[in-house]
Image 1 (cartoon, rainbow, N blue to C red):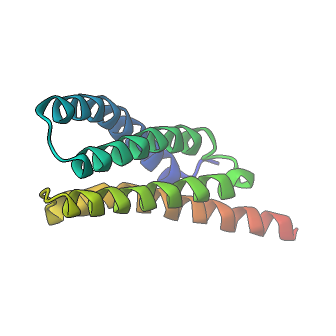
Image 2: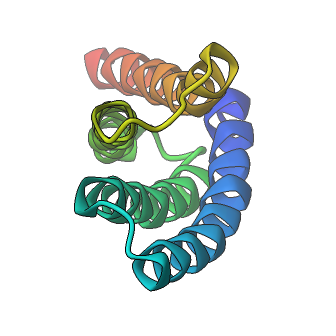
Length: 131
């Protein structure tokens, strides 16, 4: 049986990750062309890496939503996505960029839901192992 929380959040990570990869590449090119501070570019590069990992995490989550034995892999990817999102936000703030509360929350909500779905799968896997 599919873990719907993991599957839906995985689909959302695929969509947002794919869009973010495209926009990140464009933003890095634009900032580099404008000669803006390197810290902003570094923040965008980290954000781009996070977007690629989000895309991969989403694919893994959708693929493994019905496979509780793969819960640990999903949990690791969820934690990495959350950590890179926070790191990207920090670099943006340090580089004097704007980060609104809404963008902060929206950037973290889906990865957190993904992680919750992965934890649910792990609990399900642990229950099956007891029998």
